[in-house]
Length: 317
Length: 317
Image 1: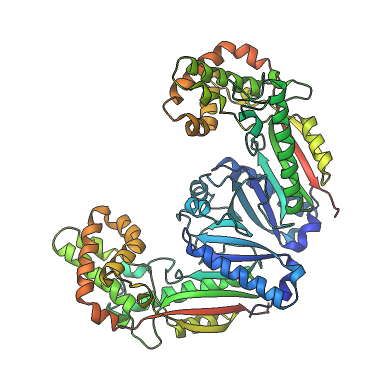
Image 2 (image 1 turned 120 degrees about the horizontal axis):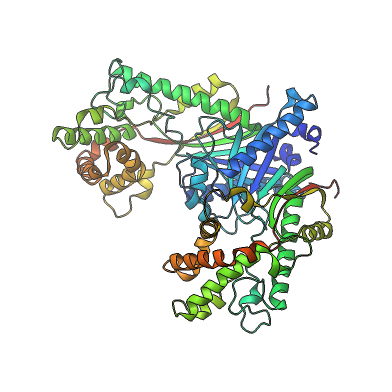
């Protein structure tokens, strides 16, 4: 898929992992990419022109880069750098990247759409923390934010990735044709919102606190990604594949409610704590765990799709 | 000094700051470099070919990169990256840097010379924490470590810096011809060592603890730097200048003993705490402050030299 021969003259093969967090998953991904690139060189008889590798690990400025740097594999064969900032903006110089990787990160929007926290807007998302089961205006606000963000993402990468360079995305999404409200991811966040509203009704937190809290996440379908890529125009889609659902892979011996609760707390504990304070965390996730077990069959019957997409920077402009 | 015209085709001008710490000094230095490069482009009529800038901030893996990243200037006009690791080894891909800057960092050796903590060696540095006033074997061990480190530094940079690229070093050193023992920097560390030995005599810390503690610092003279650069062969020295002594610049209204004590604790607190524990810090630096005031005239009569050196990567190999 990668035309390594055309990159040989640049000596350095640069890889970026967008939304890398603190490891170790990012190190495994990067190692796989490097081995594949080396293998490709060998297959094409370019043994003597193996490039040096530089890996640019990106995440938000508040990511714990100290932990990331301390856990870098000591036997790595690449030069490592950390790059702080949002991947919806420019992060790297022009035409400096050969391969971009991003795993389970791009469902995070750049921000909560403004209108959903604006009381005077028809898209005001009262009593909910996400767009599934919300008024159509809320759904539209999230869809518009997604479209805007994806355009920013693709435009930024179009500048940064060399012609012929690849972007590999692993995406938490939803199946084509499935309504937002019938998608497992969204049903889970809807359930969490209802737990927060329960706490508001009990007077543990203020209702306005819930009204003003929204999750900046959007679960796109493969079709939506195709539309965004086509509209943008700088990339071709080389491959698109459904991935096996994570829940089937990692249940093991633990009750599913427990696993989902722990994972969700790991993912959202920070933003919830920042908005509501940390005293509510135990009660919130305990009640979520119970409700999740109760609604398990229904939630699991929802549409689920994690998918892989491989984009190639077109040779133009 | 910089032949920017020869770099224009590479689009990205890459700057590395080695030993950047957590800011804000590094941001000022980088800003000055970028403005100078832009000015040079303008003077040479290359207005329309202004490059993009990428700045690679380097320090030890245990440096607080989270603080560095959080305090990056929001209005910066460069792409920022953090690069963890020792600048005595390779940190960047081949021929990827155009300008390297390092301020008050290169007097840190890569490590304490092994022989000075080896009881069976003639260079065993009993009862001292540094090489000034030590046996000649100790001085030689430090000199050898310096020579080895500087060769590693120059060899790594020779690979990383493009031909014609520059290295600007601001160095805490000693004047040509001045003995180590008659250099202010060294006299200060010698004094700190004597405070530690006082505490050992009082039984507050073990004497072996002092014997096994040595500071990995070496204060080179301009002549020694010249020798190292000539022996290495990859760089020419374009400029070498003495800098005004820092003590004259920043005394202000505070007693000099207080200033030196606070600065020294900021610089060495970490390594002393790691070796001796943190209970001794207050007493150690208090007694240092008193001894320093007493010996002020004598210490200040020692040789002092901070100097600037500008190296250029030769066009060869």
